[in-house]
Amino acid sequence: MSTRPRLSAVQSDRAAGVLLSATCGDALGVPYEFASPPAGQAPVMSGGGLGDYAPGEYSDDTQMAVCIAEVAATGADLRTPEALDRIAANFLRWRTEGATDIGIQTRRVLDGLKGHGQAGLGDAMTQAARALHEETGKSAGNGSLMRTGIVALAYLGDPEAMAEAARAVSELTHHDPLAGDGCVLWCAAVRRAVLDGTFDGLREGLELIPHERRAQWTTWIDEAEQHPPAQFPNNGFVATALQAAWSAISRTPVPRNDLPAGVFACDHLRDALYAAVGAGNDTDTVAAIAGALLGARWGTSGVPLDWQRAVRGWPDQRTPDLIALCLLTAGAGRPDRVGWPGLDRMEAPIPHALLVTHPEDDGVILGNLVTDAVEAGATAVVSLCRVGRAQFAGVPAENQVQVWLVDQPGANANTAYALDQAARMVATLRDEGHRVLLHCAAGQSRTPAAGARYAMLRSGRGGQEALDEMRTLLDNHGFYVNSELRRIVTDFG
Image (tube, rainbow, N blue to C red; front, side):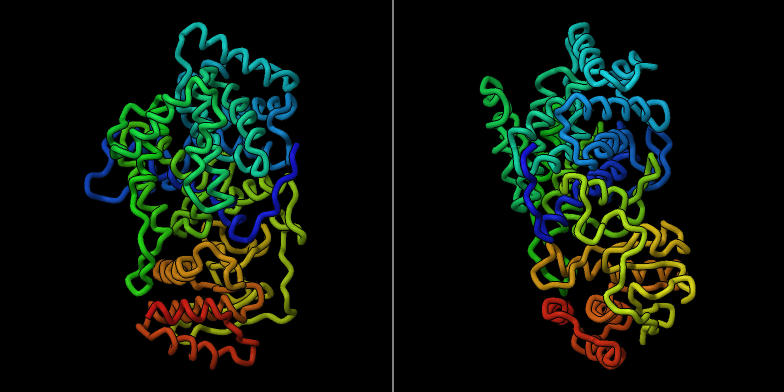
Protein backbone atom coordinates (compact mmCIF):
# COMPACT_ATOMS: atom_id res chain seq x y z
CA MET A 1 0.00 0.00 0.00
CA SER A 2 1.35 3.45 -0.88
CA THR A 3 2.78 5.81 1.70
CA ARG A 4 0.16 8.16 3.09
CA PRO A 5 0.96 11.88 3.05
CA ARG A 6 1.79 13.62 6.28
CA LEU A 7 -1.12 15.95 6.89
CA SER A 8 -0.86 19.53 8.08
CA ALA A 9 -2.99 20.70 11.00
CA VAL A 10 -5.56 22.13 8.58
CA GLN A 11 -5.64 18.95 6.49
CA SER A 12 -6.06 16.90 9.65
CA ASP A 13 -9.01 19.08 10.62
CA ARG A 14 -10.57 18.40 7.23
CA ALA A 15 -9.90 14.67 7.41
CA ALA A 16 -11.44 14.55 10.87
CA GLY A 17 -14.59 16.20 9.55
CA VAL A 18 -15.56 13.53 7.00
CA LEU A 19 -17.51 11.14 9.22
CA LEU A 20 -18.65 13.84 11.63
CA SER A 21 -20.26 16.03 8.99
CA ALA A 22 -21.79 13.02 7.24
CA THR A 23 -23.26 11.98 10.57
CA CYS A 24 -24.68 15.45 11.15
CA GLY A 25 -26.29 15.40 7.72
CA ASP A 26 -27.72 11.98 8.48
CA ALA A 27 -29.19 13.11 11.82
CA LEU A 28 -30.57 16.30 10.23
CA GLY A 29 -32.31 14.31 7.53
CA VAL A 30 -33.72 11.59 9.79
CA PRO A 31 -36.94 13.43 10.82
CA TYR A 32 -37.87 14.17 7.21
CA GLU A 33 -37.13 10.87 5.43
CA PHE A 34 -39.85 10.21 2.86
CA ALA A 35 -41.82 13.08 4.41
CA SER A 36 -42.12 16.75 3.55
CA PRO A 37 -38.97 18.77 4.33
CA PRO A 38 -39.64 21.81 6.50
CA ALA A 39 -41.06 24.63 4.39
CA GLY A 40 -39.30 27.91 5.09
CA GLN A 41 -37.65 26.55 8.24
CA ALA A 42 -34.23 25.08 8.91
CA PRO A 43 -34.27 21.33 9.57
CA VAL A 44 -33.46 20.24 13.11
CA MET A 45 -32.15 17.03 14.66
CA SER A 46 -35.47 16.27 16.29
CA GLY A 47 -35.35 12.51 15.87
CA GLY A 48 -38.39 10.45 14.98
CA GLY A 49 -38.37 9.42 11.34
CA LEU A 50 -38.65 5.85 10.11
CA GLY A 51 -36.73 4.36 13.02
CA ASP A 52 -38.24 6.43 15.83
CA TYR A 53 -34.80 7.90 16.45
CA ALA A 54 -33.82 9.97 19.46
CA PRO A 55 -32.90 13.62 18.75
CA GLY A 56 -29.43 13.66 17.20
CA GLU A 57 -29.36 9.91 16.60
CA TYR A 58 -28.00 8.86 13.23
CA SER A 59 -29.37 6.14 10.99
CA ASP A 60 -28.10 3.23 8.89
CA ASP A 61 -26.12 5.63 6.68
CA THR A 62 -23.62 6.34 9.46
CA GLN A 63 -23.98 2.94 11.10
CA MET A 64 -22.68 1.24 7.95
CA ALA A 65 -19.96 3.87 7.51
CA VAL A 66 -18.75 3.05 11.03
CA CYS A 67 -18.59 -0.63 10.06
CA ILE A 68 -16.11 0.31 7.33
CA ALA A 69 -14.29 2.86 9.47
CA GLU A 70 -13.58 0.36 12.23
CA VAL A 71 -11.52 -1.63 9.72
CA ALA A 72 -10.01 1.37 7.91
CA ALA A 73 -8.85 2.83 11.23
CA THR A 74 -6.54 -0.15 11.77
CA GLY A 75 -4.52 0.86 8.71
CA ALA A 76 -5.79 -2.05 6.63
CA ASP A 77 -5.74 -1.98 2.85
CA LEU A 78 -9.45 -2.20 2.16
CA ARG A 79 -8.84 -3.97 -1.15
CA THR A 80 -7.52 -7.12 0.48
CA PRO A 81 -9.70 -10.19 1.10
CA GLU A 82 -8.94 -10.02 4.82
CA ALA A 83 -10.12 -6.41 5.14
CA LEU A 84 -13.23 -7.07 3.08
CA ASP A 85 -13.97 -10.10 5.27
CA ARG A 86 -13.81 -7.88 8.35
CA ILE A 87 -16.04 -5.19 6.82
CA ALA A 88 -18.54 -7.83 5.76
CA ALA A 89 -18.50 -9.32 9.27
CA ASN A 90 -19.15 -5.86 10.68
CA PHE A 91 -22.12 -5.50 8.35
CA LEU A 92 -23.56 -8.78 9.64
CA ARG A 93 -22.92 -7.73 13.25
CA TRP A 94 -24.67 -4.44 12.54
CA ARG A 95 -27.59 -6.26 10.93
CA THR A 96 -28.05 -8.31 14.10
CA GLU A 97 -27.23 -5.71 16.76
CA GLY A 98 -27.79 -2.21 15.53
CA ALA A 99 -29.69 -1.83 12.27
CA THR A 100 -32.39 0.73 12.99
CA ASP A 101 -33.20 0.79 9.29
CA ILE A 102 -31.90 -1.08 6.26
CA GLY A 103 -32.37 -0.85 2.52
CA ILE A 104 -34.23 -3.64 0.75
CA GLN A 105 -31.25 -4.57 -1.40
CA THR A 106 -28.77 -4.57 1.48
CA ARG A 107 -31.17 -6.60 3.62
CA ARG A 108 -31.49 -9.31 0.99
CA VAL A 109 -27.73 -9.60 0.60
CA LEU A 110 -26.97 -9.72 4.31
CA ASP A 111 -29.84 -11.94 5.35
CA GLY A 112 -28.68 -14.63 2.94
CA LEU A 113 -25.35 -14.87 4.77
CA LYS A 114 -26.47 -15.34 8.37
CA GLY A 115 -24.22 -17.77 10.17
CA HIS A 116 -21.34 -17.49 7.66
CA GLY A 117 -17.92 -17.37 9.32
CA GLN A 118 -15.60 -14.43 8.77
CA ALA A 119 -13.14 -16.30 6.57
CA GLY A 120 -14.19 -15.80 2.96
CA LEU A 121 -17.20 -13.71 3.98
CA GLY A 122 -16.22 -10.71 1.85
CA ASP A 123 -16.15 -12.80 -1.31
CA ALA A 124 -19.38 -14.57 -0.36
CA MET A 125 -21.11 -11.24 0.20
CA THR A 126 -19.83 -9.87 -3.10
CA GLN A 127 -21.10 -12.98 -4.89
CA ALA A 128 -24.47 -12.68 -3.15
CA ALA A 129 -24.72 -9.09 -4.34
CA ARG A 130 -23.87 -10.22 -7.86
CA ALA A 131 -26.52 -12.94 -7.76
CA LEU A 132 -29.14 -10.47 -6.56
CA HIS A 133 -28.25 -8.12 -9.41
CA GLU A 134 -28.52 -10.93 -11.95
CA GLU A 135 -31.91 -11.85 -10.50
CA THR A 136 -33.40 -8.36 -10.35
CA GLY A 137 -31.30 -6.27 -12.70
CA LYS A 138 -31.42 -3.51 -10.08
CA SER A 139 -28.57 -2.87 -7.69
CA ALA A 140 -27.60 0.75 -8.31
CA GLY A 141 -29.20 2.11 -5.16
CA ASN A 142 -27.62 4.82 -2.99
CA GLY A 143 -26.71 2.45 -0.14
CA SER A 144 -23.01 2.12 -0.91
CA LEU A 145 -22.54 5.79 -1.79
CA MET A 146 -23.93 6.91 1.58
CA ARG A 147 -21.16 5.09 3.48
CA THR A 148 -18.19 5.61 1.17
CA GLY A 149 -16.52 8.83 2.39
CA ILE A 150 -14.27 7.13 4.94
CA VAL A 151 -12.67 5.03 2.18
CA ALA A 152 -11.03 8.12 0.68
CA LEU A 153 -9.10 8.80 3.89
CA ALA A 154 -7.29 5.48 3.60
CA TYR A 155 -5.81 6.42 0.20
CA LEU A 156 -5.04 10.14 0.29
CA GLY A 157 -1.72 9.47 -1.45
CA ASP A 158 -2.97 7.03 -4.09
CA PRO A 159 -6.11 7.87 -6.09
CA GLU A 160 -5.94 4.70 -8.20
CA ALA A 161 -5.83 2.47 -5.14
CA MET A 162 -8.63 4.56 -3.64
CA ALA A 163 -10.79 3.91 -6.69
CA GLU A 164 -10.17 0.17 -6.46
CA ALA A 165 -11.03 0.13 -2.76
CA ALA A 166 -14.15 2.25 -3.20
CA ARG A 167 -15.47 -0.12 -5.83
CA ALA A 168 -14.57 -3.26 -3.86
CA VAL A 169 -16.36 -1.99 -0.73
CA SER A 170 -19.35 -0.90 -2.80
CA GLU A 171 -19.61 -4.32 -4.43
CA LEU A 172 -20.05 -6.04 -1.09
CA THR A 173 -23.73 -5.09 -1.36
CA HIS A 174 -24.20 -3.23 -4.67
CA HIS A 175 -23.01 -5.08 -7.78
CA ASP A 176 -24.09 -2.56 -10.39
CA PRO A 177 -21.04 -0.73 -11.81
CA LEU A 178 -22.92 2.56 -11.54
CA ALA A 179 -22.97 2.23 -7.76
CA GLY A 180 -19.23 1.68 -7.80
CA ASP A 181 -18.75 4.66 -10.11
CA GLY A 182 -20.64 6.89 -7.71
CA CYS A 183 -18.43 5.78 -4.83
CA VAL A 184 -15.25 6.35 -6.83
CA LEU A 185 -16.35 9.84 -7.85
CA TRP A 186 -17.37 10.85 -4.34
CA CYS A 187 -14.18 9.47 -2.80
CA ALA A 188 -12.16 11.43 -5.35
CA ALA A 189 -14.03 14.56 -4.31
CA VAL A 190 -13.45 13.86 -0.61
CA ARG A 191 -9.75 13.18 -1.20
CA ARG A 192 -9.18 16.45 -3.05
CA ALA A 193 -11.17 18.43 -0.48
CA VAL A 194 -9.05 17.08 2.38
CA LEU A 195 -5.77 17.72 0.61
CA ASP A 196 -6.48 21.09 -1.03
CA GLY A 197 -9.67 22.47 0.50
CA THR A 198 -11.52 22.59 -2.83
CA PHE A 199 -14.48 20.86 -4.45
CA ASP A 200 -12.52 20.15 -7.65
CA GLY A 201 -12.15 16.43 -7.05
CA LEU A 202 -15.55 15.30 -8.31
CA ARG A 203 -14.75 16.00 -11.94
CA GLU A 204 -11.17 14.79 -11.43
CA GLY A 205 -12.69 11.48 -10.42
CA LEU A 206 -14.10 10.98 -13.92
CA GLU A 207 -10.63 9.81 -14.96
CA LEU A 208 -10.93 6.97 -12.44
CA ILE A 209 -14.07 5.37 -13.87
CA PRO A 210 -14.34 3.40 -17.14
CA HIS A 211 -14.17 5.53 -20.25
CA GLU A 212 -17.48 4.31 -21.63
CA ARG A 213 -19.43 5.78 -18.68
CA ARG A 214 -17.64 9.11 -18.30
CA ALA A 215 -19.88 11.03 -20.68
CA GLN A 216 -23.02 9.93 -18.86
CA TRP A 217 -21.58 10.89 -15.46
CA THR A 218 -20.40 14.23 -16.88
CA THR A 219 -23.97 14.92 -18.00
CA TRP A 220 -25.34 13.98 -14.59
CA ILE A 221 -22.85 16.28 -12.85
CA ASP A 222 -23.68 19.12 -15.25
CA GLU A 223 -27.39 18.67 -14.54
CA ALA A 224 -26.76 18.81 -10.80
CA GLU A 225 -25.00 22.15 -11.15
CA GLN A 226 -27.85 23.53 -13.25
CA HIS A 227 -30.81 22.57 -11.05
CA PRO A 228 -31.71 22.80 -7.34
CA PRO A 229 -31.62 19.67 -5.15
CA ALA A 230 -35.40 19.27 -5.26
CA GLN A 231 -35.06 18.60 -8.99
CA PHE A 232 -33.71 15.17 -8.03
CA PRO A 233 -36.37 13.73 -5.70
CA ASN A 234 -36.07 10.12 -6.89
CA ASN A 235 -32.77 9.89 -5.07
CA GLY A 236 -32.84 6.23 -4.13
CA PHE A 237 -30.83 5.73 -7.34
CA VAL A 238 -27.10 6.30 -6.92
CA ALA A 239 -26.85 8.87 -9.71
CA THR A 240 -29.76 11.03 -8.54
CA ALA A 241 -28.55 10.78 -4.92
CA LEU A 242 -25.16 12.06 -6.02
CA GLN A 243 -26.85 14.76 -8.11
CA ALA A 244 -29.00 15.93 -5.20
CA ALA A 245 -25.98 16.07 -2.88
CA TRP A 246 -23.77 17.80 -5.43
CA SER A 247 -26.51 20.27 -6.32
CA ALA A 248 -26.85 21.18 -2.64
CA ILE A 249 -23.10 21.75 -2.35
CA SER A 250 -22.34 23.42 -5.68
CA ARG A 251 -25.40 25.69 -5.79
CA THR A 252 -25.23 26.91 -2.19
CA PRO A 253 -23.25 30.16 -2.04
CA VAL A 254 -20.12 30.35 0.12
CA PRO A 255 -20.58 33.41 2.35
CA ARG A 256 -17.95 36.09 2.75
CA ASN A 257 -16.54 36.32 6.27
CA ASP A 258 -18.20 39.14 8.17
CA LEU A 259 -17.28 38.73 11.84
CA PRO A 260 -19.30 41.61 13.30
CA ALA A 261 -22.38 40.21 11.55
CA GLY A 262 -21.63 36.67 12.70
CA VAL A 263 -21.23 35.35 9.14
CA PHE A 264 -18.49 32.89 8.24
CA ALA A 265 -17.38 31.21 5.02
CA CYS A 266 -17.79 27.79 6.62
CA ASP A 267 -21.50 28.51 7.14
CA HIS A 268 -21.59 26.95 3.67
CA LEU A 269 -21.45 23.53 5.38
CA ARG A 270 -24.58 24.24 7.40
CA ASP A 271 -26.46 25.89 4.53
CA ALA A 272 -25.60 23.14 2.04
CA LEU A 273 -26.77 20.45 4.45
CA TYR A 274 -30.03 22.30 4.87
CA ALA A 275 -30.34 22.33 1.07
CA ALA A 276 -29.57 18.60 0.91
CA VAL A 277 -32.38 17.82 3.34
CA GLY A 278 -34.60 20.07 1.25
CA ALA A 279 -34.15 17.72 -1.72
CA GLY A 280 -36.77 15.51 -0.09
CA ASN A 281 -37.39 11.77 -0.28
CA ASP A 282 -34.29 9.96 1.10
CA THR A 283 -33.30 13.01 3.11
CA ASP A 284 -30.93 11.41 5.60
CA THR A 285 -28.98 9.64 2.87
CA VAL A 286 -28.63 12.64 0.58
CA ALA A 287 -27.52 14.80 3.50
CA ALA A 288 -25.08 12.13 4.72
CA ILE A 289 -23.55 11.93 1.25
CA ALA A 290 -23.26 15.71 1.04
CA GLY A 291 -21.96 15.87 4.60
CA ALA A 292 -18.95 13.67 3.91
CA LEU A 293 -17.72 16.03 1.21
CA LEU A 294 -18.63 19.18 3.12
CA GLY A 295 -16.75 17.91 6.17
CA ALA A 296 -13.74 17.13 3.98
CA ARG A 297 -13.80 20.71 2.69
CA TRP A 298 -14.61 22.68 5.84
CA GLY A 299 -13.33 20.36 8.56
CA THR A 300 -14.42 19.46 12.03
CA SER A 301 -14.01 23.10 13.00
CA GLY A 302 -16.68 24.05 10.47
CA VAL A 303 -19.36 21.84 12.02
CA PRO A 304 -21.68 23.68 14.44
CA LEU A 305 -20.92 22.70 18.03
CA ASP A 306 -24.54 22.15 18.94
CA TRP A 307 -24.64 19.48 16.22
CA GLN A 308 -21.37 17.99 17.45
CA ARG A 309 -22.79 17.79 20.94
CA ALA A 310 -26.04 16.16 19.78
CA VAL A 311 -25.02 13.43 17.35
CA ARG A 312 -24.68 9.86 18.52
CA GLY A 313 -25.65 6.33 17.54
CA TRP A 314 -24.75 2.69 17.17
CA PRO A 315 -22.41 1.34 18.44
CA ASP A 316 -22.25 3.96 21.19
CA GLN A 317 -20.42 6.52 19.04
CA ARG A 318 -20.19 10.24 19.69
CA THR A 319 -18.25 13.04 18.04
CA PRO A 320 -14.82 12.21 19.55
CA ASP A 321 -15.18 8.59 18.40
CA LEU A 322 -16.05 9.62 14.85
CA ILE A 323 -13.11 12.02 14.73
CA ALA A 324 -10.76 9.33 16.03
CA LEU A 325 -11.87 6.85 13.35
CA CYS A 326 -11.13 9.39 10.63
CA LEU A 327 -7.73 10.44 11.96
CA LEU A 328 -6.59 6.87 12.51
CA THR A 329 -7.71 5.96 8.99
CA ALA A 330 -5.79 8.88 7.49
CA GLY A 331 -2.80 7.97 9.67
CA ALA A 332 -2.64 4.30 8.61
CA GLY A 333 -3.92 3.18 12.00
CA ARG A 334 -1.33 5.13 13.98
CA PRO A 335 -2.04 7.94 16.46
CA ASP A 336 0.17 11.02 16.52
CA ARG A 337 3.51 11.27 18.28
CA VAL A 338 1.90 11.74 21.70
CA GLY A 339 -0.60 8.93 21.21
CA TRP A 340 -3.70 10.96 20.31
CA PRO A 341 -6.38 9.97 19.56
CA GLY A 342 -6.54 6.99 21.86
CA LEU A 343 -5.06 8.28 25.10
CA ASP A 344 -7.07 8.23 28.30
CA ARG A 345 -5.44 11.48 29.40
CA MET A 346 -3.48 14.16 27.60
CA GLU A 347 -0.56 15.50 29.58
CA ALA A 348 -0.65 19.21 30.37
CA PRO A 349 2.25 21.42 29.21
CA ILE A 350 2.44 23.07 32.65
CA PRO A 351 2.19 21.45 36.09
CA HIS A 352 -0.15 23.87 37.84
CA ALA A 353 -3.91 24.00 37.58
CA LEU A 354 -5.64 27.18 36.50
CA LEU A 355 -8.86 27.85 38.36
CA VAL A 356 -10.15 31.37 37.83
CA THR A 357 -13.73 32.60 37.74
CA HIS A 358 -14.76 34.48 34.63
CA PRO A 359 -15.12 38.17 35.54
CA GLU A 360 -18.49 38.49 33.75
CA ASP A 361 -20.02 35.20 34.97
CA ASP A 362 -19.18 33.32 38.13
CA GLY A 363 -20.69 30.18 36.58
CA VAL A 364 -17.78 29.95 34.14
CA ILE A 365 -14.39 28.66 35.28
CA LEU A 366 -11.29 29.42 33.22
CA GLY A 367 -8.90 26.48 33.44
CA ASN A 368 -6.38 24.20 31.79
CA LEU A 369 -5.71 20.48 31.40
CA VAL A 370 -4.65 20.18 35.03
CA THR A 371 -7.94 21.58 36.32
CA ASP A 372 -10.18 18.99 37.97
CA ALA A 373 -13.67 19.68 36.60
CA VAL A 374 -15.53 17.80 39.31
CA GLU A 375 -13.51 19.36 42.12
CA ALA A 376 -14.20 22.77 40.58
CA GLY A 377 -17.92 22.03 40.61
CA ALA A 378 -18.26 22.00 36.82
CA THR A 379 -21.11 20.03 35.28
CA ALA A 380 -20.06 20.81 31.70
CA VAL A 381 -16.73 21.27 29.94
CA VAL A 382 -15.78 23.15 26.78
CA SER A 383 -12.31 22.03 25.68
CA LEU A 384 -10.24 24.16 23.32
CA CYS A 385 -7.51 21.53 22.96
CA ARG A 386 -7.11 17.79 22.53
CA VAL A 387 -8.25 15.77 25.52
CA GLY A 388 -8.07 12.11 26.49
CA ARG A 389 -10.97 9.72 26.53
CA ALA A 390 -11.18 9.81 30.33
CA GLN A 391 -9.87 13.33 30.88
CA PHE A 392 -13.13 14.50 32.44
CA ALA A 393 -14.68 11.18 33.40
CA GLY A 394 -16.82 12.76 36.11
CA VAL A 395 -18.75 14.91 33.61
CA PRO A 396 -21.48 13.32 31.45
CA ALA A 397 -20.38 12.78 27.85
CA GLU A 398 -23.24 14.85 26.51
CA ASN A 399 -21.94 17.84 28.46
CA GLN A 400 -18.38 17.58 27.16
CA VAL A 401 -17.75 19.62 24.01
CA GLN A 402 -14.41 19.64 22.21
CA VAL A 403 -13.45 22.49 19.89
CA TRP A 404 -10.88 21.99 17.14
CA LEU A 405 -8.65 25.02 17.71
CA VAL A 406 -4.86 24.86 17.33
CA ASP A 407 -2.86 27.48 19.24
CA GLN A 408 -0.77 28.55 16.27
CA PRO A 409 -1.47 31.29 13.73
CA GLY A 410 -2.32 29.85 10.33
CA ALA A 411 -2.90 26.32 11.66
CA ASN A 412 -6.70 26.45 11.66
CA ALA A 413 -9.19 26.14 8.83
CA ASN A 414 -11.86 28.23 10.58
CA THR A 415 -10.24 30.09 13.47
CA ALA A 416 -12.86 32.81 13.95
CA TYR A 417 -15.78 30.41 13.62
CA ALA A 418 -14.27 27.95 16.09
CA LEU A 419 -13.65 30.70 18.63
CA ASP A 420 -17.14 32.11 18.23
CA GLN A 421 -18.71 28.66 18.46
CA ALA A 422 -16.79 27.94 21.67
CA ALA A 423 -18.09 31.11 23.33
CA ARG A 424 -21.63 30.46 22.15
CA MET A 425 -21.50 26.91 23.47
CA VAL A 426 -20.46 28.22 26.88
CA ALA A 427 -23.49 30.53 26.73
CA THR A 428 -25.76 27.63 25.77
CA LEU A 429 -24.52 25.46 28.61
CA ARG A 430 -24.90 28.31 31.09
CA ASP A 431 -28.47 28.89 29.88
CA GLU A 432 -29.11 25.22 30.63
CA GLY A 433 -27.97 25.83 34.19
CA HIS A 434 -24.52 24.27 34.01
CA ARG A 435 -21.38 25.45 35.73
CA VAL A 436 -18.91 25.39 32.85
CA LEU A 437 -15.18 24.71 32.75
CA LEU A 438 -13.67 26.51 29.74
CA HIS A 439 -10.09 25.41 29.18
CA CYS A 440 -7.22 24.76 26.80
CA ALA A 441 -3.94 22.95 27.44
CA ALA A 442 -2.13 25.65 29.45
CA GLY A 443 -4.96 28.16 29.90
CA GLN A 444 -2.82 30.98 28.59
CA SER A 445 -3.90 31.69 24.99
CA ARG A 446 -7.02 29.95 23.70
CA THR A 447 -8.80 30.07 27.07
CA PRO A 448 -8.54 33.87 27.51
CA ALA A 449 -9.39 34.41 23.82
CA ALA A 450 -12.60 32.39 24.15
CA GLY A 451 -13.22 33.98 27.53
CA ALA A 452 -12.97 37.41 25.90
CA ARG A 453 -15.38 36.43 23.15
CA TYR A 454 -17.80 35.13 25.79
CA ALA A 455 -17.58 38.45 27.62
CA MET A 456 -18.44 40.23 24.38
CA LEU A 457 -21.53 38.06 23.91
CA ARG A 458 -22.69 38.32 27.51
CA SER A 459 -21.97 41.94 28.36
CA GLY A 460 -21.53 43.69 25.03
CA ARG A 461 -17.90 44.60 25.68
CA GLY A 462 -15.68 45.51 22.75
CA GLY A 463 -13.00 43.06 21.70
CA GLN A 464 -10.00 45.01 22.93
CA GLU A 465 -11.70 45.82 26.20
CA ALA A 466 -12.53 42.15 26.73
CA LEU A 467 -8.95 41.11 25.99
CA ASP A 468 -7.60 43.72 28.38
CA GLU A 469 -9.90 42.35 31.05
CA MET A 470 -8.55 38.84 30.44
CA ARG A 471 -4.98 40.11 30.57
CA THR A 472 -5.58 41.77 33.93
CA LEU A 473 -7.18 38.58 35.25
CA LEU A 474 -4.60 36.11 33.93
CA ASP A 475 -1.38 38.11 33.66
CA ASN A 476 0.13 36.17 36.56
CA HIS A 477 -0.73 32.87 34.86
CA GLY A 478 1.29 33.45 31.69
CA PHE A 479 -1.29 35.22 29.52
CA TYR A 480 -0.02 35.29 25.93
CA VAL A 481 -2.98 35.16 23.48
CA ASN A 482 -1.44 34.51 20.06
CA SER A 483 -1.51 37.21 17.39
CA GLU A 484 -4.20 35.60 15.22
CA LEU A 485 -6.58 35.10 18.12
CA ARG A 486 -6.00 38.67 19.34
CA ARG A 487 -6.79 40.04 15.88
CA ILE A 488 -9.92 37.93 15.54
CA VAL A 489 -11.30 38.95 18.93
CA THR A 490 -10.90 42.61 18.04
CA ASP A 491 -12.33 42.03 14.54
CA PHE A 492 -15.57 40.82 16.11
CA GLY A 493 -16.16 44.41 17.23
